[in-house]
Image 1 (tube, rainbow, N blue to C red):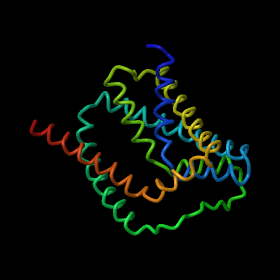
Image 2: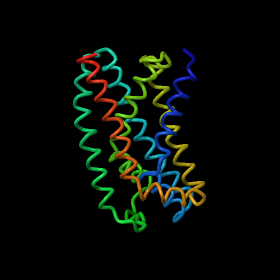
Image 3: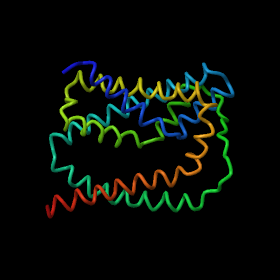
Image 4: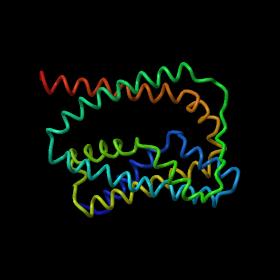
Length: 211
């Protein structure tokens, strides 16, 4: 397999996955506006390092699942309950959310690098995301669970995350009007995504038992 392919796929998956506005990329943009580009890039480096670790954990877990397909069925059933609960939570949270604009305030005086690591480590969504992506790529024969392929994919994920953060830092002012709408309706957007995943997972479970 071309060694450039897993690097590119990791880069693409990560940069696309981090593009929607969230706490980490918006914080990176705010740091850039208030303190300058260098502290924001240091913050982004810390956040990207955690993404690398999360992607590695996810791909290794996906490798295990690839060898034990019977576990996937159980995970689908557990996932259906989790995503169903998340869907209800986000839609309820969206109804209660107030429309006023909320500023992200930074009180910590510690290194921006470790702040980036801290905020990124609190976000667990990348792990199931990279599990799904790597399994999907493997099913299409675009990715192989071998050491060099895994390391290149994980490296690409880190570079893609850093690139996405850099874009927020560099172009935040131009994107701010668009991101405000997304931030205001983020609970509904996430709820819709988890709802769609719940429906698709339900169909997969029904197909497994009755198909």
